[in-house]
Every structure is written in C-alpha cells, then in structure tokens.
Amino acid sequence: MAKLSRDFYAQPTLEVARHLLGQRLVRQLDGQRLSGLITETEAYMGPTDVASHAKHGPASRAAPMFGEPGHAYVYFTYGMYHCFNTVTEAVGSGTGVLIRAIEPTEGIATMQRLRQLSETVIPEHKLTNGPGKLCQALAITRELNGVDLLGSELWIEQAEPIVDEAARQTARVGISQGREHQWRFYIANSRFISAHPKY
DNA sequence: CTCTCGATGCGCT
DNA sequence: GCGCATCGAGAGA
Image 1: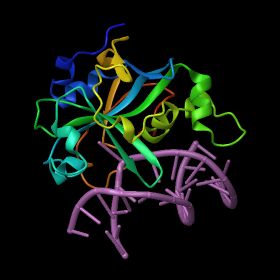
Image 2: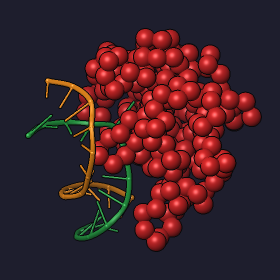
Image 3: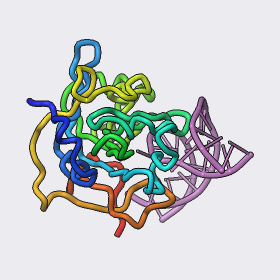
C-alpha cells in the first residue's frame, strides 16, 4: 500500500491525529517488516501548548517538530523509554502527533523478542498498547529521531479508514498541564489502547 | 480487574 | 535538583 504523503502530514494537527487512526505503521528492520494498525494518537499543538516539548522552542530537543512535516520526532523519557511522533503542519509550526498504541499485524514474534521482559510471553493486547511499548517492539530509538517518514526505515501506509462513529476523543494521558483539551484520539472497542477512558 | 510505587537518564530551571 | 508525552511488579478486591 501507498505511504502517506507529505501533504497528509501537512494538514492541521488535529486532522492528522484523527486520520492516523486505522493506518498502518511500518518498520523495516534487518530485511523484515514489522507493522501494526494505529489505534491511539495524541495531538501536540505547538509552542503555546503547555504539555508540548515545543514550548521550549526550536533550539530545544523538540527541534524536529519545527522542521518539515512527515518526519519523525523520537525522544527518550523516564530514563528508559522512547516515544515516537510524526511532525505535522508547515515548517516552523512546532506541532506533531504522538503515536500511543498500535494493533500488531506483521512480525509479532520479532516484537515479542524485542520487548524481552522475561521468559513469559506477553499477551498480544499488551505488546504495543503504549508509546514506550510500541517503540520497544518496533526498535524505534533516538537513532530514528528526525528521519523522513517517506523513507525506507519507518513510514505509515494507507490502510482501512475509521468511520467517525468508531473514533473517540478524550483528554490526553500522562500530562499534568493541558488536560482541558480533548486532543487524544482512539478507536472505540479496540483492545489495543493504552488506557481506558474514565468518564 | 484496580491501585501504588520504584526504576532510571536526562533536559531544563 | 526536579520532573518527566512510561511501564511492570506486587498487593488487594
């Protein structure tokens, strides 16, 4: 299937976050395809968004978000984990979409190995249902910070569109400021999401 | 299922 | 130093 275009990522960030649901995230690793359908995303709306790293400006670690849309912003957090974002909108916007969860589809055995917790096999619905988990499962590290998502290491393909009735919108997860905005999107009824919404 | 808590490196005040 | 766009172990229900 076709890779999502530069124009797709150049759209308004909330549109990108909504329409990334159901698309296929693909990682090409040592000649093998690892992939999963995106089930959960969050929009980070630029320097004025108090929850975004972009509030520290284009000279900070968030620099990739100020660059060309359709590139990766990968950062290291909690001393242990990576998180993966797609850069959105025009150059200079500082905006992006965090990919929070996927439903694994190809290369599941490899993902199990990359997650290597212990001897025990991880149940499939817990393999990639979180931003740190999916980066571990797809071997996404800081080495991929800034890479072009129209390149050959990491990209997103057109898959099955999610109808509006199946898309849900809530506050973002894991932030202390900015919870007043409904900038998290997920697929209703998916088992592959990171947190159950509490109403 | 739910909750609490510690691990662990680093960017920023 | 502090706080983090997180996660898994362990305890309790």
